[in-house]
Length: 422
Image 1 (tube, one colour):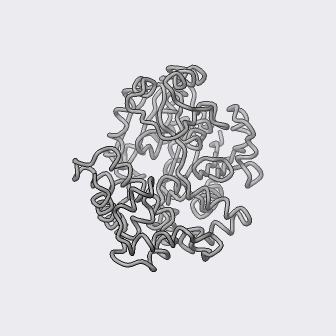
Image 2 (spheres, rainbow, N blue to C red; image 1 turned 60 degrees about the vertical axis):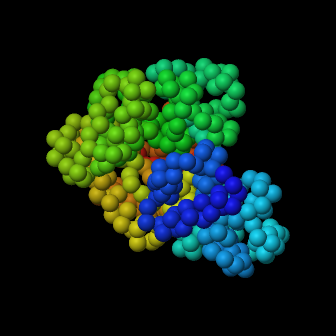
Image 3 (cartoon, rainbow, N blue to C red; image 1 turned 90 degrees about the horizontal axis):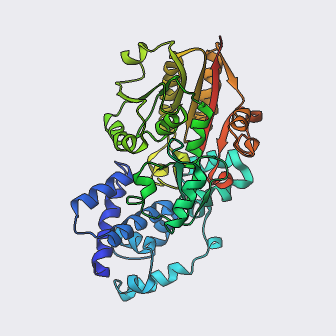
């Protein structure tokens, strides 16, 4: 595509994304469906430009004010990846001069909000938690996430998969914490990779892998993944159960559960039973009350621990949406707890960085459910052969999991674990 046409296409897509009425990945996917003539390189450029602008929105909007013409075109120029000469061939002389000036701006010339590129309410909430680590946290959130894989232990061991991937020309290494994880360098296509096609690996962030280890599901048990989504953790749990017992994958979205079907087919699992539910009080849940050995509640949340992957979330969330999520999380957790038999284990998790969705919800559950004992996560991780478990549980004296992108190179995660009293 000619540089001018590609820049115009970027501008059009950015304007659509900045309505913030749908998740960015959905807007981008729809744009690609509606413009089938776009090739792989054009699609990559469009996607990279959009996500670069979302990550550094405040900085780019400030720089854009000194330019002229369409705001969306100016943002597209600032976020455009790759060869400078290619881009310059699409610019007017005035745009070239303006862009050259923008490239000379250094961080010490920027105001704080233009460096951290967060809404002020979120910047304050994160700064209050991490203090002097704030700049490091922001830098990590504004970088794309690595590509992590989880090895399907039903089919192969990690060392064998590592050797297979390296033989295929990929650069990879074991993840530092999850004994099931592999981290790839770059973003290679997996669609035709034999290890992926054969179900030996699945894409899953290392932090997410640790949640299945905390649940520690056993052979022959009755287990529920309460908010299964597309089933990444469901598959990990099913493999841990060695394809035995019964694993229910509940979700209120049949569309998300449909995305689990091809993954299930690759995995070789036959013990997984996807169930679309209307809400957390669905009659199909009530019928299982008191019968379940283990329940994972990876609750709907703000997703602010995943800004490396979904930078639009920081512009689509606000204190009101976070408060509403916390209410829903409390209701879901209480409903899930009713499923457990005496001695059963309950894991509550979010991919949020905010205490309102994490410690506050967990503490309230403990106060309201005295028939549950909180288990120390650091000890559970140690039993699962996770290295340096104390470093993953820096708050509450090792009682809960707290993962930070800048400390652990994972998405931001929280988890608390309880056991129902006998």
